[in-house]
Image (tube, rainbow, N blue to C red; front, side):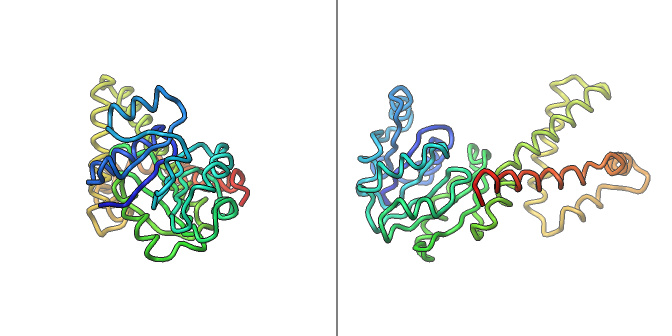
Amino acid sequence: MSTRIAILGGGVMGETLLAALLKAGHSTSDVVVAEKFEERAEALRTTHGVQVTDLREAVEGAEVVLVVVKPQDVAAVLTEIAPAVAATATVVSLAAGVRIALFEEALPDGVAVVRAMPNTPALVGEGMFGISPGTAADDDRLALVRSILETGGVVAVVDESAQDAVTAVSGSGPAYVFYLAEAMIAGGVEAGLDPATARTLAQQTLVGAAALLADSDDTPEELRRRVTSPNGTTHAAITTFDDHGVAAGLRAGVLAAAARSAELSGS
């Protein structure tokens, strides 16, 4: 693995991608990070043994540039790196809500741009990335980006017009699961469990159910039916959820997240 990769932004997601790349076998000599805060930069050098420098130096000679900065910082970053980015480079945006067009307008002709929406489970190697190719991103470039992001999880290719939906389902999705866990734990405590035991039961149930869903060819609906005996305990819970509009509320929440994503990105 000799692809030269620059990571612009050494925050949580930047470090997550860095750690995933190194774990997957990329050499510390092939990955460079740009981080403006010296204390943070030194922590990355000490922890991972990589070069941490400024934006211009980081992108010089890089075949792939991962832009992992705050959305409001993207324009300034692109202005600074544009003169140093090779026309053969592939630039990957992990800045939420920033459209491909902004990158393509700011960077030299020929630079391939790919937009990606990550989520926080990438921190433990179980992330979900929705990626969209720009006008110059051919199949080979897209495959390269996929191979890099797959070090942190699963990758799905979608049209950029679907990125708001990706944001709503997987980008924001971990918060929905944590929200469910909160409610399950609270319910367990009210039913008589101590908080620590309630948390253990809830979190392992979620982990196990997710693993079962991922390993099965059955739909979520079918898997739910298998554990829902008529007039049993699960049936009592599901019926109550329906009476309180839980499913409808979740669907409405996903649509609200998609609408807000579109509003923020101007799409």
